[in-house]
Image (cartoon, rainbow over all chains, first blue to last red):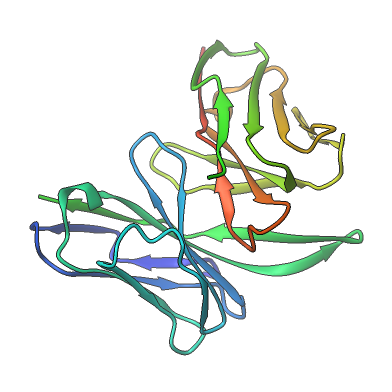
Length: 119
Length: 113
């Protein structure tokens, strides 16, 4: 399919373990976003890439969180020394600037998410 | 920091009843987007509003952007069971926000037969 894919879909980690979450954006999409969604909450921004450049990482909760997109396509979100409070769904979204009826619009297309449970 | 609140948090309606969710931002937005997330699913883009006072319709859904570009609403006429899910507004801050999209707290809609 042509949508955003993420892997793994589910991840159970022991506290202190490192995890790596992968995002395959829609081919050709310049922008890529990572969000964290806790149960019953809205997605919270973590970080944003334009091609390979990480332009905003203001939402990363601590230095244990690290994201990269080395070739401007696939992105990986790494969490080191996981803690219980890291348990959440991690969503990836990609987008492109579109011009619709004279209005610039950047629609974000979300992947299915990775559900992380830290025990 | 910027906050985007939605009310109500939950809404149960009988099929056929109308539903409205309200979105309020602490800061002025350059645009407002609405997403729907089905249980166990991911957010799916519904629409974007850009202009002050703008109103857009999609079949039974009516979206409105406030004059001050700090609030928005989504109204569903004659709800159906397929409308079940959580509705999120999300906005780009007018200045200094870059490409960061701030999501609202969401309104969970349940529709009973």
